[in-house]
Image 1 (cartoon, rainbow, N blue to C red):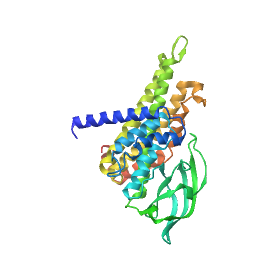
Image 2: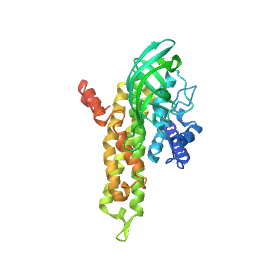
Image 3: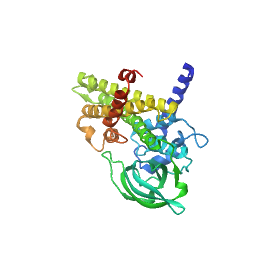
Image 4: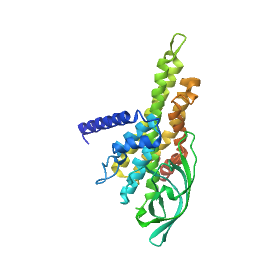
Length: 342
């Protein structure tokens, strides 16, 4: 790609990010239904869906996902746009008008009359009560489950986001199930990891921006605390971690958009992005709360909307240790120097 093309693409992504920030700015703290309605009205959840159903711009969908993370929006946009909708489109299952999310679990699929019987469980399903459909891979099938058919035990992660445990023993129509392409289960996992890495890079940016703003405005002993060397060091360390998260997430998005999710290069990029996001999340959240002091721990302050998500998301779709182990196995299976200089 030429330099002018890259520059043009970056400019377009910048405009899209600003558009997402503008349309979500007033509803980021609202309920899921309202935030999703705003996103859906602009057709943003279909950005990563291949033609002819949508735009086919994975990087564009990732840019919006980053903004939802930065604003702490109560909506699983990354799950829908980067994971669930593309998985449905790839096997030509119908795209619902409402919210669709993705999950992993242990489910058996068998023929039952004109439909399929699903038996098993799905764990920690995001926003299950608000979703119209839940997408998962089981027994070489991609399944689009009507969420109302499952028996749900509601729960929440430490950020307060809905995470349900679903028990399944239900017959679904044949048009809700499609044969899965080779490696579909692994693709769903990697898509989820990229979605979390991108959203975490946005949440980290939100924490950094809030910390810079607070340090500039908070006056102590007659001058802003941003003048204190310890605070400056904390902000600089945060900025370095945020940039590392964004760079690794952007690299994973670029590789997966170019090569798909199932190549070795994609595995390296995805594993690096999710591992980096998890490791940096602890540093960014800790320093953000140190800069803010006691006020940052209160429910009234907005900082928790991003820091609690950083802590929660680091373990979803594989923790940093899980993905570090994937990288370690790749390195030991071949030439370690080749892997680190790829």
